[in-house]
Amino acid sequence: MDDRAPALRPAPSAALAHRPAPVDLYAPAPAAVELSAERGPVVWVPDAWGRMVPMPKHLAPAPMAMPEPRDLTPLPLLDPIAQRFLGAGLGGGALAAGVGYGIGEIVSAAAGFTSGAAMWVALAVLAWRMPARALTSGRDGSTVHIRKAVIKRNHFHG
Image 1 (cartoon, helix red, strand yellow):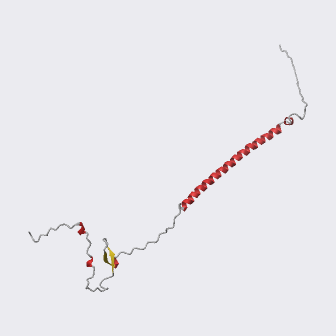
Image 2 (cartoon, one colour; image 1 turned 90 degrees about the vertical axis):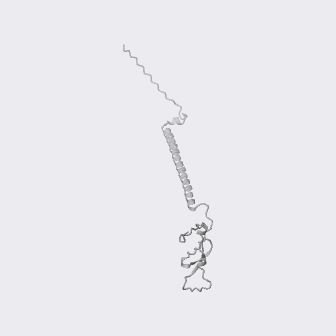
Image 3 (cartoon, helix red, strand yellow; image 1 turned 30 degrees about the vertical axis):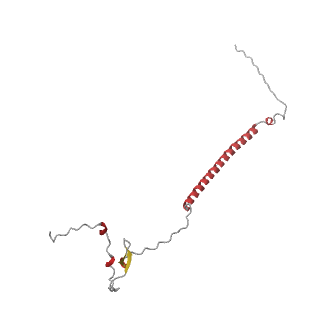
C-alpha cells in the first residue's frame, strides 16, 4: 500500500452531518481575562436544538414585539350595514305595496264615481224627458183625448 494514498473513510451518517458545532468555542477560558474593548456585547439566544448559544448583540434577531390586546367585546348578531340593507328592502317593499294599494283604491273609486255619476246623469235626463203624467202615473188627469180620422177614397182606374 502506498502511504500517499488517502485512506477511505465511511460517509458520515445524517445524525453526525447535522450535529451543531460545540458552543465551547465561544465560552471564555476560565483563566483568561477578557476586556470589554476586545469583544463587543454578547447575548445568549436559543438555537434550533433549544440550547442557549452566545451571539454578538449586533447580529442577534430583534426581540419580538408585544402584540396589541385584542378587542373581545361581543359583536352584533347581524352586521349593521346588513341590517340597514334589510330595513331598506323591507321598508321599500312596504312602501311600494302601500303606494300600489292606494293607487288601486283611487282608480277603483274613480271608476265607481264615474259609473255612478253616469247613472245619475242618465236618470236625470230620463226624468227631464218624460212627460209629467208618466211620472204621476195618470192620477193627475182622467180625460183622454182620442182622435181617429178615417179617410176613404175609392178610385177606379179601370
